[in-house]
Image (cartoon, rainbow, N blue to C red; front, side):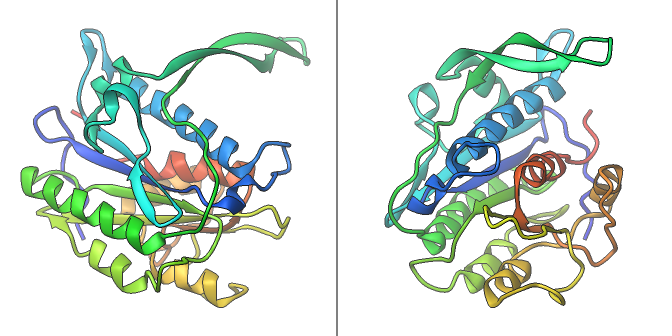
Length: 277
C-alpha cells in the first residue's frame, strides 16, 4: 500500500461518487430535507471545494477527474447531465465550467458579535437529487469498475482513484461483496482503487465512524459494508483525527448510521488525496 504519488496536471487522480437514488432516499433527515436532497447538497459543495483546491493564480489546474454514478431501479448511469453527460469522469476544469445552474441561497454566518446573520451566497448545482425504485448496487459497482479499469490503464502511475459510495439500503440485485473486492483489485503502480462506504440513516442511532473491526456493528448489513470498505491510507488518518475521529492502522473508510455531520465529514475526508503539485 503506497498512496504517495504526487498529484499534478500530468498525473491526476480521480474521484467517483456512487449515489444510491432508490425510493428510500426520499426519507426525511433531522434537518427536514430528504436524504436525496441533503446528499446532493453536500456533493455539490464537495465539487466546489475540489475546484477551490485546484485553483491557482493562472486558473484551475486539472489535478482531479470527477464523476458521479447514480443508481436506482435496475440501472446505474451518469449522474451529471448537460455538457458533462458525455463521459462519466470529467476534468475538474470542465466541472467548474459547466454547472447546471447557480442558485441564490442563504447561509447563516457569524456576525462577529456572538450572533448569526443571514448571508446570500451563490450555490452552483451539478447534481440533482432523485429517489425512486430499487437499489441495484451490483450494477453500480460493476459500472464503476468498467470506468476505473479504463482510467487506470490511461494513468498507470497516478494516485489511484477513490470511490465514495453513499447508500441507505441493501442491494436489490444480488450480493455486492465479491464485486466490491474485484473493484478494489483495480490499481495503478501507486496502489489499489479505494472504496469508501457511507450508510445514510434517519434512525437516530449512534453513528459508527471509520471502525477498525466489525465488532459492535449492529447487523449483517453493516458488517457487509465494513468488509466492502478499503483500509484508510496513512495520510487520511491525520485528516480523520483532525475531525476528532480516533482512526487506527486498521480503520476502514466506512461510516454506518451517518446523519448530517457524518455525511459532510465523509465527503471531506474521502476527497483528501496525496500531495498536489
